Structure formats: structure tokens, C-alpha cells
Image (cartoon, rainbow, N blue to C red; front, top):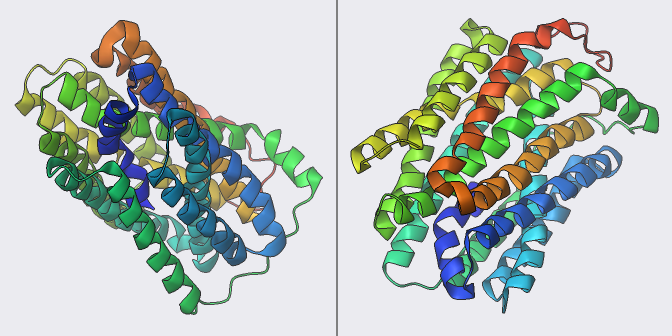
Length: 376
């Protein structure tokens, strides 16, 4: 899934060249992908709480595979946008169900550690995607071939999941309309959703535009621009491994707050970097600063809201999907008059907002939670 997600960054300039797209239209591609991510993620949570997470995972995995192959044969921009809706939806359900399944299998005290470790493996795929794609593009391999190979890889992954036996999951809770209403009127739940919106949109906006920014503004080569995304994800993965060791000894809320603030500052610095060396340093720092935020916000919410985990996880991740739909597109739109440098103020501001929200979140009671206790 990580390869499928991050391959869009080095592919974006190739798609723009093939279909003759401007920055606004390039941003629209990301918006379509993440609108699908959000819509299908929300829908899948309710489905999972009725038919089970494993069946839901397989159903939408099939949709993801079909979408990748359809993208590889896209004849025009309009068709590409429609396919990206379904591709984003498949990725969203993959992300949601894999985290929800893992959460159900974990003991309460291990949940934050295990979710963070899963994100470490996500980071490995996120590093591999841009590197492999950039190697292909630097050797004049068509983007269509790259996505066909990705489709074959996803087929192999689906077959592996079908053929392997996993521990039994807890029975899916049948969510009621009242449960959804309680969640949507719970201020603490909504604040966590807002933080997922801010973080995920900012992260994807930062690395999603990274190849275009480094190529068009900093004059990186094709290989260097792809490597920039890979370096970002390498720093993210190393940071997640370090954070996994620290989680038992730190205050989760304060850790999220300070890492988010640091990430916002570093993201702003990228907009003013003047040479390649400075950009490389900022990319590494941004990866480290962002490394544990997504998983820690998700774990923070999961420790509080334990009922109907399919719907809870899908709502958290869909909130991030809305951020992915809005922030990269807003960056592309603002780049038209602020330039790509100026557009980086958007993710920087949202990352700083997360720090402010986690500073005040203990003031709110989790009224929809069944947990006897949870993070402050």
C-alpha cells in the first residue's frame, strides 16, 4: 500500500507531461485520489462492523488491484481522475482495515507500539516506491509500465493474504445509528479527527509535491527528485523505530504536541531553503519530525474509543483522507500565485495547529467512549 501511495510523487511530473497538465490540474489528481480515499474509508467502516474486517479487506483489495490496472491504461485526463477515485478508495480501506485488524489483535498496553511498528513497515514500502519509480523513469520506462508492475505486485499480496491463516478476530460489533450520533457529537473525538485531517493533509502535501518542487524550483534531476521522497520516508521510518522504543516512557499527548510543532517549523524552512544542501537537510529533519505523529494520534484515539473499532478507525482515517483531499489541492491552487515555495506555508500552519489542539484536548471529556480510562 505504501508503494501504491508514494509512487504518485515521482509519477506526477510524468503524468503532467503526458496529459499536458498545469499545477492546478496536477493538484486535482491528488484531490480525486484522496476524495476516493475518504469516501470509501467511511463506507468501509460500517461494512466491516457488519460483515467483518477480513471480508471487507479482501473486497476492497480487489477494487484496488483493478484500479491500478485501469490507471495504467488511462486514455485521457477525465478517465484518469475517475480511476484515481477508486484507487484512492482501495488504498483507504487497505489502510483502515489493516490498522483495525492489528488493533483488535493487540493487548491494550501494546496498541501504540504495534501500530507504530506497522508504520515502520509502511515506511520501508514508502522508501522503495519513489526509488524504484525514479529508477524506471530515469531509464525512460513509461509510467504505464510502472503501474502495470505495481498491479502485479498487488495481486501477489492479495493471494498471500488469502492463503495465510490469521488469529481469529473479535466478533464485529453491530453499529447502531445512536453510536454514530454519539461519536459525531463527542468534542474530543472530533478534535482527534481534526488533528488527523491536519496531519495527514500536511504530510501528503509535503511529500506529494516534493518531486515537483525539487525538480522545478531547486533544479534536481529526475533521480534526485525521486530520491528526495525516498530520503524523507527513510528518515520517517528510522524515526518510527526510535519512537517505538520510547512510547512506554513518554507522555503520548505531549510527544505528539512537540513533534507536530517541530514539523511545522521545519516545513516552513523548506520554503526558504536556497540551495540543494539545505533542502536535503530540511527533508531529513521533516521526516524525523513527522515520523510518529500519524500513528500516535491514531493510537491516542484507539485507547479512548474501543467500541465499533471498524467505524472508529474508518472515521479517524477518513478524516485524514479529507485532509489529503484538501491540502495538496490547496497547495497546487496557491502555487499558481504564491509559487511552490509559498504554498508550503499551508502544511506548516496545519502542523502547528495540531500542537495547539493537543495542548487543549485534556479539557474535553470523551463522552462516546466505553473505555474506563485512557490518555489525557
